[in-house]
Length: 425
Image (cartoon, rainbow, N blue to C red; front, side, top):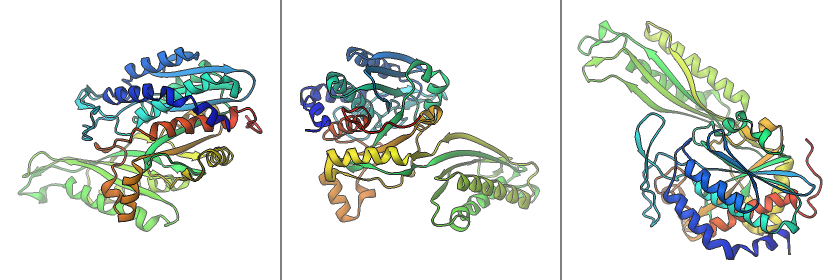
């Protein structure tokens, strides 16, 4: 019997407690930078398992350290924050929580991205590993990160001295629950999650009465021309072999139908998988906006602000191969290849700061029968709620077990009784 199977022999005894914890966490979500209740629960449970606990890292971040003799140091990470989404799952443990966001607005709160799954899986993987220390050796760092949805939680922990409070890891590992058959895991070498840039552009016109447009420079028309022209960056300037997504998610201008305003504000979101592509598209955005302002006779130069940024998640080849081999050995045909994802994450800021390799994989969270039927009917996008949907709710099992099992399996690829060659620093 492989070490993961030996460790998971204890799972059924603790499964009801994990499920209860998950339901409670799902009912009590917390926004980015507000994860105080979650952090306190995490810290208490880690301490009860024998971990040395560091709290308040980067605000509400928590790390637990479990030393178990000579060997590698492995960092496992879970994110804790929820989203300003009103839940529409109909679950008996659905969230009805509201909170005040960073802008002072009262908003509904929901674990619409599955971070409650991540927390529950890492906590119970940590407990299982702590309970069977005779089956592994080395040091385990269980890291619970705040504010992933804000894109600055990982950087905040690093800036706040994360690596002076926990041992320097040799490798960093993380996972995410996504639409897909529950019970399955999937890995991918190289780029897996996109880099993301959110850009706010303010263009200026000259306002006036809607009945006398000849006396104005209309920023609404100017903004509309920019929106149309931006569509050509991906379709006409970017090779089809280089994936990229450019979305204009917001356009705000004016207050009344018969008043031409002085300015318009556009908010763009860019997703890329390679630094040269990102730089080229950012330059194209700037070129198009400046040219359209010139063509419209704008009285002032436009203003550009990058206000939200996520790094590229690019899985290290050797680390990913090692985890993928462990998954194939343990999960068999339930271990597959992950498609390239257009979503973004800030996890890679942690291993990048430590200059260590990392890999990031996915677990499925969809009822297998529902997934199979949707695939067969060609209606996955219509029938299977995705992350950030108010209807996103991973099935309880085997999602929690698989996520727990995957973390144990990946960690043991470095911490097991015969983990193989250790990574270079």
